[in-house]
Image (cartoon, rainbow, N blue to C red):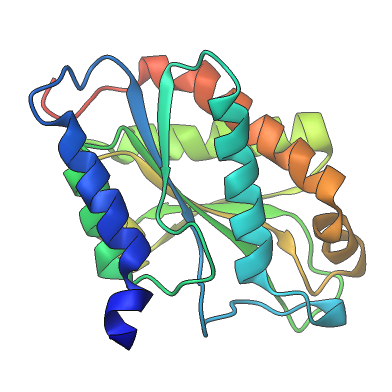
Length: 219
């Protein structure tokens, strides 16, 4: 029973993906936003015991709400809608089932160095036909966050994270580290609802602006 409850949001999303069967999947671009961690996996913990899992879920929901309020060319799905730990493999399965155009995993950072700051974006170190699009997405998104919100850019980095490694053959995918909870200034910034609204706006506007140039799997 407990295991079923833990995965209920994934099952709901997977069922929703069945709606697309027999429909024109090219009508809208499909984005999967993955709020990192969840449940008993808190992720990074900052000052005042703020937890990465909560900040990233609030940010993902803010992006989703912006999209719902607009006449958007995007269908956005979250890998979790509550404080639930969804296994990484299930997040990946969902993205594949939806024939996703872009997978974005949202995180924030932590360091023993309290002066560490800035945004870094990861892409898979495995080569695929989507590698170039993933890298270009990462560079452009860093540039937008720097230009519009003043975040320092720590560079685009390559990693073997499971959510990147197992999506890269099917879609462009990036993992975004949105500042350091261990940094006093960035941790305080990420605690403010208005800051998350600004972040959500920049991320959503980027998705709207850039998704037309991405090739869908199978095109």
